[in-house]
Image 1 (spheres, rainbow, N blue to C red):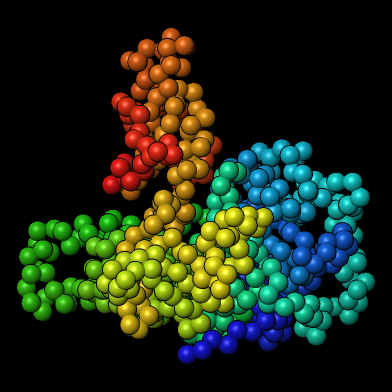
Image 2 (spheres, helix red, strand yellow):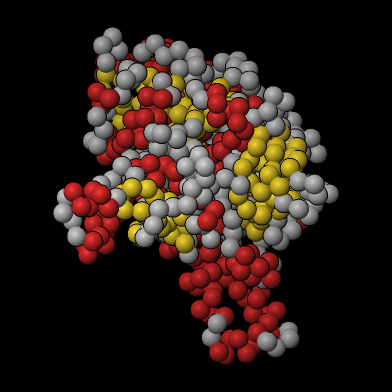
Length: 554
């Protein structure tokens, strides 16, 4: 099946016209709903604001705040105006937010009030103005930009431009070729290692058009968005695809704990559930495992026919917990625990596992649940190619390289990093190890990079945490590794510094605990260290004095 990739911007021009009277966005907490007509009108107002303050096509606009209706409006208004959106995760620390705003050359910033309070505006070098995501209040304006005045006069100017009201006939978005840059998505927040993934209209349309053609979402379907929209995964399939077909999106807008999430799923009853493994793993561990581990239940499950009956009951309860009206649950963003996957397959729960990365906006492979092969990461998308750098790609793991319309343009202002992963003929080195079957089904077998993937789908780069840790007092060198699902720092202490400051070795543990707390205040929540383990000797190193990392990871 060949995917018909159409113009990214025009997808939304068409959708907003055709779905004018349908519900589009609902805030789960307040219950307030905007129809597509109201979404289109709000977008037109933001376009007028951009025009008034002199924002040019191709200029960068950053947004940092939790998911909300306003977040969606700002994103969609920016890309349909012809500017480049720079989404920033709201749990990045202020130093990282500042770095991304500066590195992306963002001229305008939409930001949560609480995050803005921690920022130092003087350090935002290229910024011309900042507005609140929550209440549109002007937070900062620089010389020559009358942002406050423009906001005050916006409604009056809008009525003047559209004296008979804004209608579907007024929707005319610019003709912007799919090859143009639409989004810069930063894979990490740390200043020394940040990489801004440049995604074009082609990259995003490749994902959205696949979602349309396979009917992941459809007109008047229901979606519950609870993954961060600043992530490529949630953005593509909880926002961009639904809005392109006339779906109704409910934005959870809060941390999706199992209790909160199950309540929301029951109320919204989505037709598709996009989630990370952590959600299913928690439900399995906290609700299913205790039930099937009881003595009586274990005995019952050993009896033929009774086990099928019980599994059917568990399946039905689990389906109802997810709202009861979904076609399938798509798991992505991180590997799914093997035990959980095996159990879900055994009870015939409608789930599938996909594979992707930010650099592909994000999707690389996916299979509908009825065709899903357990242990796999789905089949390559029709327009994507893959090769495995192995002598026997079906049996011997090698690095997965992919090519196709979803592959990014490169890393923003980082030609060296781009050259390292992108070949001249378009092949992207994913950094993942795996095999591929004859029908294009991918089986991931590990990672060739040092990146750690958290259970919630966050990319964790240990070198970034180590860079901060190595700047701490009494730390000579360090390694951050994953142990039992938690981040642990192995530290070789700076014994000379301990001597200089007359710190007895008996106080080493308390000093390390203090360092751990300080470090955790500087990193994102998902990068926090659970424990520091002092090492008795220096780490073994290569002739180039690089630590032999493989000796310390297990």
